[in-house]
Length: 636
Image 1: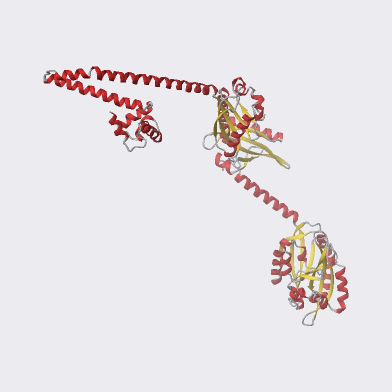
Image 2: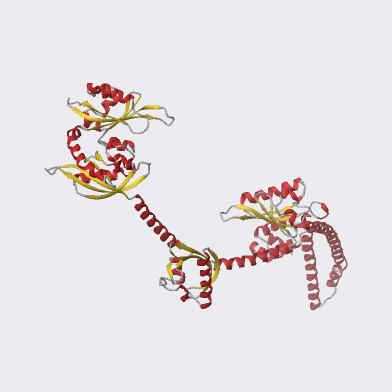
């Protein structure tokens, strides 16, 4: 910002560090004819162009430059590149870094050659206006078109906190805050180009450092030939007035914006319950667009209006806010539940107004009632369950346990809720098993079902439990706790083991029974061949009639079928097929597909293929290229 201002300034600005220039503004060329690059490359060029008669004073001027406050000023002559002399005013002060160490000088030259010629003229004007201006309450000053001050009254000195000597010959733009300086400069450049009486307001840096707003009446002063000499400005401090207007406008704008977007109903009434203001939400829900200036109670049922009037009286007379819940009919004909906060709005010398903000809590109340009912149902369900139901937070502490906790853990719910999981008093390896399962749910955010020894069972020995762990997530999707349901399956597991043992014994018994049946069948077939078949052969050799011979053939054919069926059954029996495999054999013989067999037996196609493979293996067809269905028919 400083460089931008310095580059565009009519004054010649520079910064000198360790007797070398680090910055020289472009105005040096306009004043002296020497370019900035020449000063940067020749550190002593400035001293060389100072007029010999002023050189010693100039060097002393640099040595005594102040560290703080206003820079010191010195008028002197410079010898320009073209050989002419120009009068300048030089201002200088020291520059220090953030640690307070001296690093150089900052200086400024202002061309005052023309000002010296006009000095007598300014003095005449000054005498003319001084007496009048000093008796003015307003701030008065005179200034040239480049904003150089030629006259200031006492009020102007008080405004800036500077003496007349410090102000005269200095551009008043320096007291304008930097953020507003370019805007003000542009206005007064245009005013100097087309002089006229103008009224203008802008910021000014006050004596106490505050930014003040001043209203100026600027009038041009011309010489007899109509040439512009200077401007006379009269100003008054409008900071308080402007701030009051700004505050009022801001307050009104904030109020309008706030009320426009407020999702609640808002209204203001006077002491007689006449509506003074309603916001958009109230207009949309209540249809109150035309209520302004009307009695608010005339749109309500008598009993509702009487209750509201009593509440309003309490607020206005008591001078304190109240929070009430009321049922009010709305534009649609429904009756909604509102939570309303009414409060007094004080007015100096007048009765207070009544303001109110109402929230429609109908759905909230209904949801709360439904939630309470739902919570009660689920609590009753959880408390009546024989399973151990619990909730663990991320700190590994119990948030909730149901009544079954005492039967499962030996501790009452009050002894567990708020306590660490280690309070279960179970072996370390069991605690570690629990922690591993819990950490998996917290890490993945997915439910987990585990079965094993996770809690103690009856009699103080490790029990076998089915445990379901479900993550509980907050609104952001983060797992903040987990819900667990543990069911003691120790007895059912032991029964299953005993049943398995019984099944093994039954299979052994069945195998023996099958061997006995096969032996009996073989004995029967052998006796049949030995005792019946020879008799048939002898009967055939006797003199039989054709009809009798036919009956003998039928008997012999049926006997052979019995032998064949017995052989097939024997073949399948020797394969030791299981009942389900025997059912699959029958379906294969009926030419059922794998998918059809699976559908009939409620098995997956993959499982049916597994059983088909086992059947081939038991029948000795594992590595043979034989069609299973054809082979089964061959056995028949």
